[in-house]
Amino acid sequence: MLPKSSKKKKRLYHSLNIIFMLIIILPLAVFFYLGNKYDFLHDQYIKPLMAGILIYTFAGVFFLRKIFDKIINISNEFSRKVVTGLPDAAFEDGGDEIGNIVVSFETIEAHYKEANRQLESKAKLLTLLKELADLCYITRDPNEVLFFTLERALRMVDADVGSILILDENESRKFIMRASIGHGDRIKIGDEIDFESPA
Image (cartoon, rainbow, N blue to C red; front, side):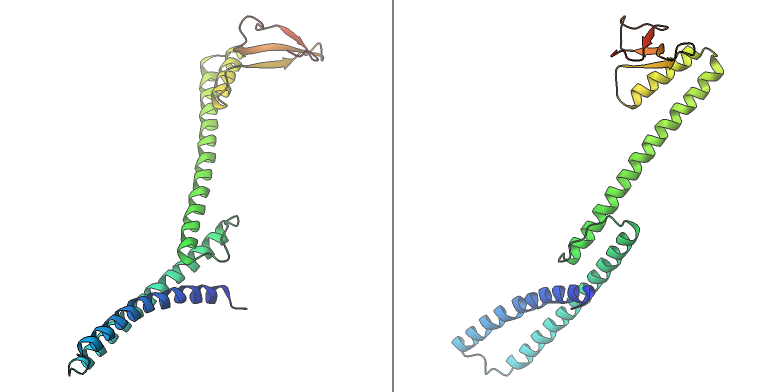
């Protein structure tokens, strides 16, 4: 069984051979057809002209092959680095070299988007902690601190209704409401709520 890089080279060089045939065969066929029809194949300048065209074509194919080699090497390097750094990268076994480069960029982009999302989430949390620390310097009222904490927590999770309940020290089966947003007059600060209460 051929190694993976060898398979890639074989696949890409197969494409190169097809390009070569398209560049050479059709023009040569037309040239010989016209040469036979108008009888200019015996002209003294035809052979040097044909040799020049063939040399020019082979030089073009040689440079194309060099470019394809660079593409293969870049694809191999990208794939190796991405698979090493991001094990969840999904490369197709039969994928072409350009496709692997595209998959590498897409995987890197998805990874950095996720990393950026996590950083934004941590930045919001740090901002909240800083605001709470600043508030503790301004007020010593625990109810204000709890209300501010609830307000910021609801904003972080994009919610409209929430409350902070603290377990009653004297009655372990009851909660005491310490902060509330969005409940209206149904629940007030200081209200006691039974542990089994559906509310």
